[in-house]
Length: 73
Image (cartoon, rainbow, N blue to C red; front, side, top):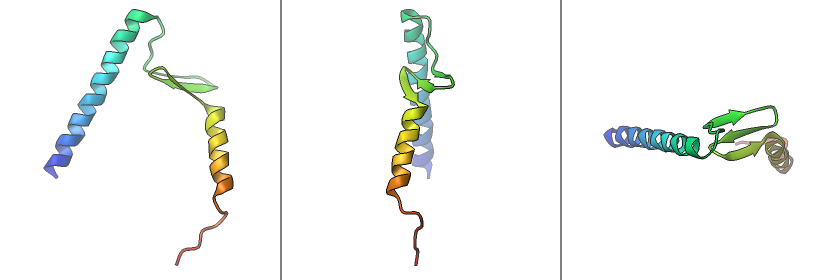
């Protein structure tokens, strides 16, 4: 259990350091340096753009692939 706590804290510190480094270096290069930015069409996380319509297409594809009901025994 102790190793899990250490790993969790180390992972959180690692992610926080990445976000701080991204914000600092992006602020030198250009004015729009938000870590998370969203509007009505998409969400952008650290320069990675995710469009809602693309997510909707993938969810619809998964829903069409899955059966309507599951039988459990």
